[in-house]
Amino acid sequence: MSLPHMSESTEMYLKALAELGDRDVSIARLAERLGVTPVSANEMIRRLGEQGLVAHMPYKGVTLTEKGREAAANVLRRQRLWEVFLYEHLKIEWAKIYELACSLEHATAPEVTEALAAFLGNPTVCPRGNPIPDANGAFAPLEGRSLREMAAGETVTVRAVNATSTEVLKYLQEKGILPGARVTVIEAAPLDGPLTLLVNGREAALGLSMAEFVIVEKTVNEGR
Amino acid sequence: MSLPHMSESTEMYLKALAELGDRDVSIARLAERLGVTPVSANEMIRRLGEQGLVAHMPYKGVTLTEKGREAAANVLRRQRLWEVFLYEHLKIEWAKIYELACSLEHATAPEVTEALAAFLGNPTVCPRGNPIPDANGAFAPLEGRSLREMAAGETVTVRAVNATSTEVLKYLQEKGILPGARVTVIEAAPLDGPLTLLVNGREAALGLSMAEFVIVEKTVNEGR
DNA sequence: AAAAATGTTATGGTTGACCTTATTATTTCA
DNA sequence: TGAAATAATAAGGTCAACCATAACATTTTT
Image 1 (tube, each protein chain N blue to C red):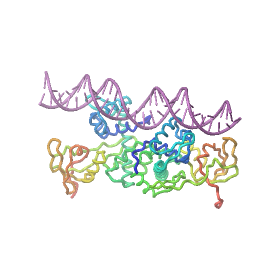
Image 2 (cartoon, chains in turn brown, orange, yellow, green):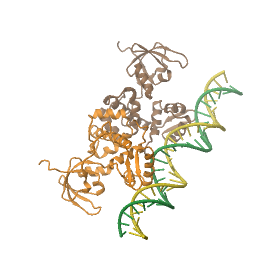
Image 3 (tube, helix red, strand yellow):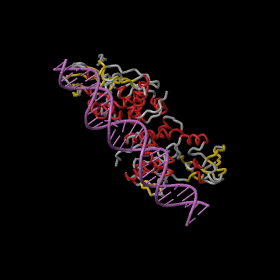
Image 4 (cartoon, rainbow over the protein chains, first blue to last red):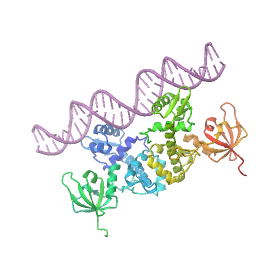
């Protein structure tokens, strides 16, 4: 069951696929998130395909196989447990934990993962609001829709933030767009135009490519 | 002051040099500890020389430069802080912490190092008995001599264990040769012969290549 | 001082994960 | 349906860190 050894690169690809929704992810999208050229991503996806971790339907997209999904869950588990540790125990700034946890993740043996989970009290969500898979790879996929799809006038509650770049996370942090925040869409400009939001009584502008990774739920008027 | 980026490999070489005493370390010895061929080690030492981290006197040995010493202290700090965390907080078996901490070490940003040190209460020794350099790279070099040099009849106290292989550490752990243990040399066989020791009332045999990395102090009859 | 042991350098090879610059295939849209 | 946009593949290149084999240099031992 324990995979022979996964390179850091393999782990990053699996993680990105899982974060992007794990089915029919276009290679261009994947390449963009990973900061590599589409050609490189294509090459790498071929390799992952040979290892049985993904299935690639040309012109359709990439989908994790069952084996790939398990491996990805494992990577996400490590990633998010470290996020909890860095945030809760080391008091590291929210916007930085993803990147810092990412490095640690690659270096974490199964034994350490499980001991860490126990130390942290087996948390089920990370500080970015994403679920933490259990030791068997099971986890409730995130409910809710992307803030990107919301129309003007809607009020929603942020459930999770799926961004990974420290820069983007810093921007969201500054604007108060964190899990639990209540956000009202004041205006949604056409085309790729930004959303204008009301967060904590302040206005904030948010491009669609950032809004895409903010997962929200319609607020069900849960008491003032 | 922050070095451009150090590869994992560079860090391993610096760490090995520091652990081996950091002056006039032969390439063969270094290669052996790192599990690479002398040819590879030679090549790598040339690269490190070009970066100004080591000085290599052909046929004499390798010595860390000031810059190299600083970098090495930094690596050792991270390594040993993680050892403390894994042992004290995650309750991981003593023999395994070196190897597990080693992976984490390479993935640790300065920010995390300092937060971790604060979380742990700025410890000054690791569970293997080695000193932890402070944030500026200063640390008391270990006093004491190698168990290898002890003669029959001597009784000593183990101060530190500088072995790195999990297998070796497991053996030492089983025999009770841990920091703080009191050890009497019963017999020292000639040539490369083993030492016969008395530890906690039990006899234990120890090859010289293992004994080399057990740092001891003559027991000054401290009580009983 | 010669032989043996050890250390160094030269040469050429491998691997993984990237890159760029074409070229070719497919899909989408006007 | 044909052009434009997007996606895939092919070919060739780079880089770090290893490897093996072989030749050469220096030290140590006899």
